[in-house]
Length: 421
Image (cartoon, rainbow, N blue to C red; front, side, top):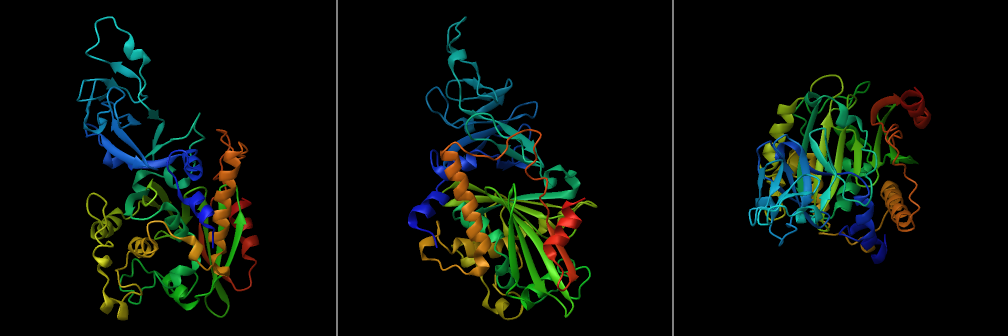
């Protein structure tokens, strides 16, 4: 468990909060690229308790500004995109993507007053069909060099999912290896495309997780956060290894639908302290990904505005008959829906003073320690995480799912096969 004070330390992300400052010191997703088409309307964005506006100028360049006009506070998300910037509809003040004031129409000819005006603005990078923003102080760190953001667009599927709870309980769900033996169990594996027998084994990953509900779990500290090894028994002479990752400060990289040929990144971005967006990136290395399949699942689980079809108000449309023969949870086969039922059920901000952690929760405990250490270092100006352009914190980020002979030294195997190359 955590003390009330430590729980507050890790979960509060508004301006000036310790965890908020840590998250602001890193690049964060602010929108999907498809939410901001050229000639589209400005997009109001709320992130870590701050209200901003995202727009794309006529040349397609995105800009992220404070939402309230520097003149008299009007909402710039209703503004006009024109003349290379965003124009407030109240008095016509025009701002470019860097926050410079280009025009104040009511000023007399020859006035230079506009040059003294700066609209709050934040650096943005568009990569991997996502628009990222840097909300921290000073120069931004190097942009995350993560494989999923660098593959061709045809090999990647991106989406986001609205969660009515704090970001931390969302991200902690990704790095909890034992919950998949229950929450995500499917009894009826009718969709052969989704539930394939793992290469080299005789069972699907779904059946393996149901067979061995007490896996061996080990961790390693890395430059990017934590590497997580999960080993389950398979046949009498085989074992199943999964390697997933907690990536500081608020995302994870785990095996997913493209197991063995890619992975999934889930990035949990606070809207405020009681709501967040889960941005998901799925990719396949060897060939284009089946976007139609993922799109169909998303259309079944969320509305066009990314609000979930199954939610707390309708009790996630849980079906008790389905629980008897089809799924453990009774809320369909979408893992995203399963996770939301669990994490939202903890309350808007989980009260971690009431939890009772076991040895299976070691990843959760260590991830919290990594985040707490970063908060302390940032407060003491001792943050040692590199921001050099030539230093890639994610060079050793690997996601693995494979069958090995029982008794294999899985850590040594991982290092020799995936790192020492």
